[in-house]
Image (cartoon, rainbow, N blue to C red; front, side):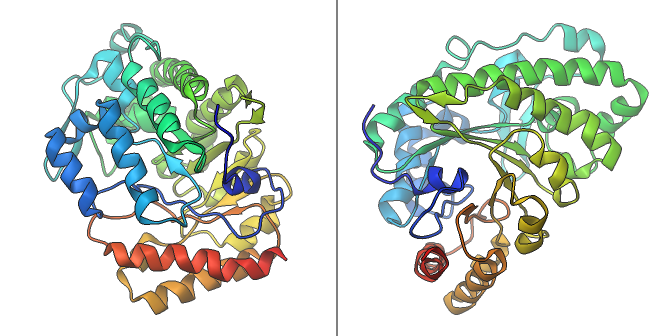
Length: 355
């Protein structure tokens, strides 16, 4: 493989010295960029864009061409590719987000689900990873990702997005055996899917536990964290002569950082409700931290964005082990110039912490 010209992101995840704090942004290939909207229009819809490796590569690289400060690329895909490959029939309703044609509601439904093969059933994702790695030519590392078993299960049981996860939580309390069977099958699927991405060229992987924070403390440990730990234990951790770092991100998981840090992952993502300085004091000896600016700050003026970047950098303090990011994904209405102000501020203001 081509030598990596910028390994700042990977070094920070391993808490090795860096010159400035690395930056990437969740949903950096997204609807806030006019070039992304043009490519999506060419594809016809989101699913067609995601399933076309050449176009997925095009939108992955667009933000890097616009923003030279970015220190990593993230595969353009969706967290719901695994349920789709299990035959659930993913589609998107305008204004409503993802939906599934089939819903999982019983142990029989769960037992009938296959464990997808990464190359046979999700080959378009592996082809996208290979294409992106080739086209990046070593500019920056490529991040692969998946949704967590709990998060994927909520979409499969609810049939789409949910505010209260009532069907999934009812299954959790009424029929935990069935939910554990689903989560176990999803953990197997995510492990093999992420390993497929690593073998295809992903240089770090992130597990998005978007809805783990909706659980009680006890339920989180049993129904979300335990399955992410199982995945971490099964991942390829060295490839192409380098460590492949793992980032776990539970939105709303600030209460459980110590448990997350005990999984063996290299880094934890933080949402914006968590103070990064106190998070470093709690778990910084074990893991790197990623985050954690409120995405809504990007609607403010550049001077305010710069001030918030400065505050977060100061809260983390001197030394490596911090990857700057938002506390969740950028939203579509953000002015691309404000994203530029964000990236520029991170590199410019962080140098003083890495002397």
